Length: 69
Image (cartoon, rainbow, N blue to C red; front, side, top):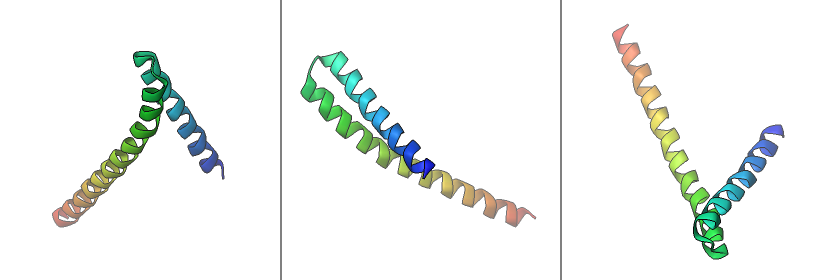
């Protein structure tokens, strides 16, 4: 349950940060809101793909080490 709370609080901070930076740079509430929604969504997909690449790398290293033994 703690992990869920930490994840939720991080998500809230991420949205606030994305909104604040975009709003400060543009002065537009609309752009700030759009960035706060779009950027975390894209970031989530990129993170998922990043994790898959690292898992594949670890699996390939394990296979390579198994063949070398």
